[in-house]
Structure formats: structure tokens, C-alpha cells
Image (spheres, rainbow, N blue to C red):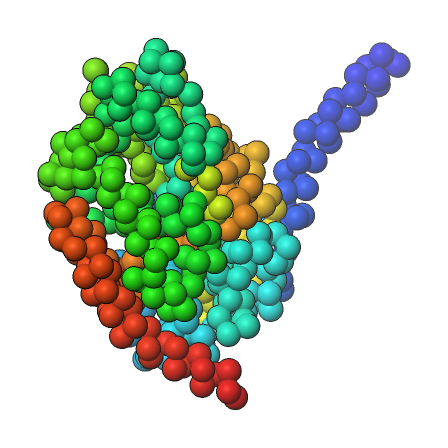
Length: 433
């Protein structure tokens, strides 16, 4: 009888131990006074697998608080504008910094809704702050400041991953001396042709000038024809125009589709040694070459010497401060929300608590790079409004085609000044109040 009692006690103890994590997870979610059945309307650009991952992330919150999410997916900026102007905005929009700037008087601050600034690197808080108010919470990020290569090919040829910009430059020259083409730099992309070139140039700016310089270009404090920008173009041009340095030389850069450029270092035999591309390239390599193994046949390293990262981020903006919205903001900004985001594998969470919880080794490596950087800059062409991006791409295409660099940069600087003039006037008026 005594033996059976001990067995029963042991079963109860083990049962209690096994239920603690689930209880702890549930108890760590703060419903902020929301009642079961309360709704949160959301507008975002995600669809398909992306929506499925978001639902996975939000399920613990829905289960704990009984919230009902009412999402709408669109890539039409005009839809958000129409809703806001009609006085019927969504409770939450996962959108852009430009929208946070446009609707700053209609948005609630993230800290007033329950987000903790200390959960994020300072630069992410600063990037989401408009006129002193933290209006945009970063929930999803992807990094661009990385170079893809084949570890197997590097090993066979005696190449090592560079740790500084000078080492990268020396590696490129060693590859040329060995009759290997260092780069695959094709950037053909229809109406967006040139965008991969703008990404490469921005990463060179991060090496040579740093993230504050890039942000000053975005703010209009540094003109696009500044000598630092010209230097970055010239470094890029040396590689992008010469067939010794990139597949097909200038014409290869201009005419090769950006997806085809990703594939070239991983062909058999390889047509190039490296390609600089964003985090999404890993998935494209997997689809094109399903037999290749990550870490052996393909991998990536951070652009050596870069003082910060270039990347994109989806930002959460709130047009409501009702309890259900506070519960959502508090959850996504909490360790529980960050860990759920990492486990779902929805790119990288900027929340510090996410590191170490990614199941995909590529995401974990990118998350570590993100966690250890000292700065983060958004894409210049995507961030400056009013057709600036198209002007920038046109200049890059013209420069690779052999046109005068000073003339091209001056044309972009003119567009930069014109489109940022209204923003500068608004900022000055706000500061004067």
C-alpha cells in the first residue's frame, strides 16, 4: 500500500512539473483588461504562409485572452489612406515608417500601449520615433548586409571568409589572379532594375561612412551627390563594370536577372564566387538547388567592415488604445511574443528575447548578426518618398552603362532635395511650436 502511495505521489509530482511551462506561458500574457470576444482589426501586406505564421504567433494571445482578430491583407497603400481619411482606420496597421510620419497625430505611442523600450536595441526605437514619440514598433526584420558563398568551393580553392573590408578587397584580387570571377552582380528586374545595385552601394556606405551618414541622406542632411556617395559608387563600379570582377562585366550586370545572379555561385561549376543579396536568397538557393546543404554548399557572412546593417522592417502602428490593442502590443513586445515569433520562423524579430529560439539555423545566424550590430538603416530608395527610388535606380543603370557619374548623382540629389523639402518644412514647423 505504501509503495502504491509513493507511485501515486511521484505521478502527481511529474504531472505538475510537466504542466508548469504551459501555465507559466499562459500566466506571462497580460490581457490588459480585455474581455473574451473583444476584437482587433488589423491591416497588413502579408498573405499565404506569412499569414499562417502570424496566426501561429498570435494563437497564445488569442487562447489566453479570448481575443478575436479581424485581419485584412492588401498591398495597396491607398486603402490605408482611405480608411484613415474616412475616420475608420484599422486598430492596428503593420505598415511603414512613412505612414507613421504621415499619421503621427492619429497614432498612439507604443510605450503608452505597453511596449518596453528596453526590449529593443536603441536604434530600432529611434528609427520608429517621430518628433519625439515612439509610434512604430518593429515586429519583423530582414537583413541585406550579407554575402552568399559556397563553403565547399572556398575550401577547395583555398579562400577564407574575410573579417575586414581590406581582407574582402584582397580576397577579390586573389580570386581575379586565380582566374575566378569574384562577383555575380546582375540586377535586371523590369521597372525596378538597379535595386540590387543600390543595396550594394548602401552597404559600401555603411563600411566607409557608417549608419548615421546613411540616415542623414534619408533625412536630406547629406546630399546624394556628396563625395562619400561618389566614393561608394566608384568602388561598386570597379567591380560591376569589369568582366574580371563580375560575370559578363557591365552588360552582365545590366542584363542578368537578379534571381539568376543569385544562382551563379552555386552552379556546377560555379560561375562566380560570391553574390551580395538579402536574407531571402537562402530560400531561392534551396528551391533552385534542393540537393545543396546549408552550411556546406551555401552559406553567408556579414559584409565585413560594415558599421551597421541595411534591412527592411515591418512596423506596427496603432490607431487605437482599447484594452485588446494594449494586450496585442504588450504581447508582441514581450519575451513570450518574441519567442513565439522566432519559433514561427517569420524572418527575424527585432526583440532581444528572440535570439536563441529560432529553429531554422539560417534565421538564427541572421538574428545573431542583427543582435550584435550597432546600427540599422532602412533602404534609402524605399524610405525617401516621391519617386526618389526610381531616380536612384536610373542613375545606377546609367553609371554602369558608362554615363558620367557626377551628372547622374546631381540628378538624384535634385530629386532628393525636391521630395524632402515638404518634410523638412513640416519638421521645422513642429520644432518651432
